[in-house]
Amino acid sequence: MISSSHLLTVDVEDWPQSTLDHDLPIGDRVVTNTQRLLEILAQNRVRGTFFVLGRVAERHRRLSFEIAAAGHEVATHGYSHESVEDMPIKRFKEELHRSVEVLRQQIGKPILGHRAADFSISERSLSILECLVEEGLIYDSSIFPIQHPRYGIPGACRRPHLVRASSKALLVEFPLPTIGFGPLTLPVAGGGYFRCFPYWWTKRALGMIGAEGSTAACYLHPYELDTAELNETPYRIPTSLRWSQFTNRRSVRSKLARLLKDFRFLTMGEACKQMRANLQIALDLERCPISYQTVTSSM
Ligand SMILES: [Zn+2]
Image (cartoon, rainbow, N blue to C red; front, side):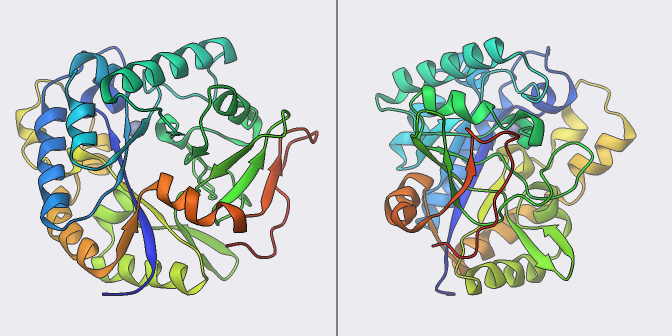
């Protein structure tokens, strides 16, 4: 056991609808895949933060309750899984509120956190974070401090930090995990990076993040445990997606078992309670243009 605490997060969505075509109906595999993941976490006595998509919650009305009843934290992954980057702000607010309300009613507790579909908050849409504060949320985990064709804010703070809204209220941001490698910032410990890199690399990266005195928001999707999906799906899947989305799904179960044994994990709500007093403000939404300030130390 390595002593650092990290954060285990799960984006609960149905792969064809979230990735292939947002107009597709939500299927049933998301339920069995999520239940499979809940079993693994129960066996390892690890609790995580589950960002549940609003459309999944409306289609499968007991799933969020099952997740919460197993001791995990339920947060929102938005409603439709469309990119929030180009979404009109009015629609973003409506979708956010709809997802928060359905989840709140299903689990009987306030919803505290948010993750944007595909980490789609970019430098030009940072003001979206204001909407999260207005909705009463206390944390977000959408910012990937890397250069990537579909997402990311290069130069964003790599550690958990505070965002100050115009109202002066504070939001905790848990960026997606990266390591600094010379002039490069490399993504680690989540999704395709977890599936495709060997486990020793993930373990080493999490050790490096822990040694920096920071914590990593590891992430995965229940469908990444689903090794039969490619053969059983009724939809035609382009070759590029076959490669990026299905490679090494077979390795996820064993890698996850090792990850859960090697590290300790907190939920994001717990992390907010433990860390918030020591975090620094790295983003002030009243500044214009909004941009990241240098954080010398935090946590
Ligand atoms: Zn997602």
